[in-house]
Length: 114
Image 1 (cartoon, helix red, strand yellow):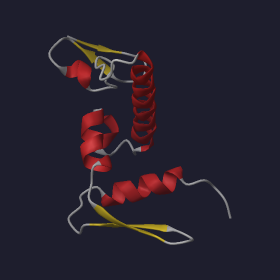
Image 2: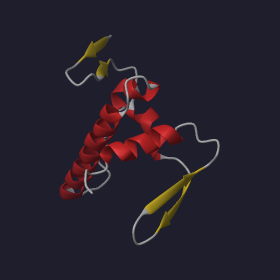
Image 3: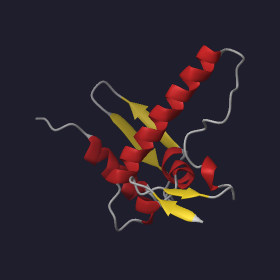
Image 4: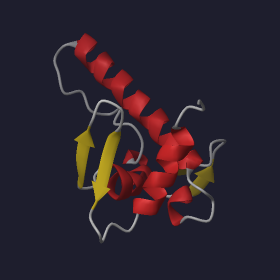
């Protein structure tokens, strides 16, 4: 059974799909404050990935992908990062299939300015 909710996410039955969002079911610490901070950080990461997914052009398959897929294809990638005083350069491997999409997303999130 799948139910579509307002943000376009699918709420699934107990077949394992409920773990695709923030990990709210895990309490790693004895301290309730630490667990609340952890929950706050996971919620922030969830909203950031929502914004990233909304910025992906609709013609891309990742525009409707689950968070784990976006995490594996865009977030957990190998790249060489070079920082200078004026810019940050990201060098992808030649075989990186999502390099163009990643560059487009970075340009979309850049602030407008001179």
